[in-house]
Image (cartoon, rainbow, N blue to C red):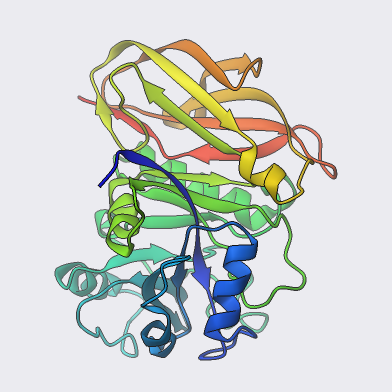
Length: 321
């Protein structure tokens, strides 16, 4: 395998095997049109489409299922054994999360603050998680622009509050992709840092390791002089970091709407640790990091519709106690 690099992925997709308009081949064609390297197939309460898609290499397909219940929607990826979702109880979801983990699966939470019943049955997350270390990732962004979307803003606040409590949970984007028409921000995706060439196992490991970037389109990353990046743990002190902003994929899709303006790094309590203007595709800065903290780099800028909005969120770099 070659060195690691960042791959554009969509982690929340549906087909005609549940309530999507896509056939499996049509979904894969649409993903290629969006220049996606990988997709997670997460039909509601079925893995039937995964059998049809598993041989795909362009894009790579990570098989899964979106547990769709009255109390929340939970994507479960690459679980070796079927775990019955039908008897999941709102006050005992941990036992299901634990069963998925014991069978090698990855657990996420989809659109936690989406309007629920009767708009979308179970779309709002009402399960009471007691041990958040059992949750691997959280959709902090579902379609839309966070500044204009209350559910996304609430999801980001939930995620950062869990980071404050010491849980390492990867942020993701989920288009909840059912059909081609009507989707905002065509280049939005989750970038995953994986060994090349991309594999389903590499996608799964990147999510578990917190090597994710949530983006409206631009690939925005942070890296230390020692090569540490999102999901890694560093020693406290003064930390030289490099920020990279890459618009190649968005522009290849004909999206010239993004104008990066500012880099902000947030830490515990959602306080600002650094703010600098975007001046180049690669920028160096010095970040003072405290023990027991988390540091999430974000990219802000303009789109055609919205000036001064959030364009990308990197999963945090963590610091040792």
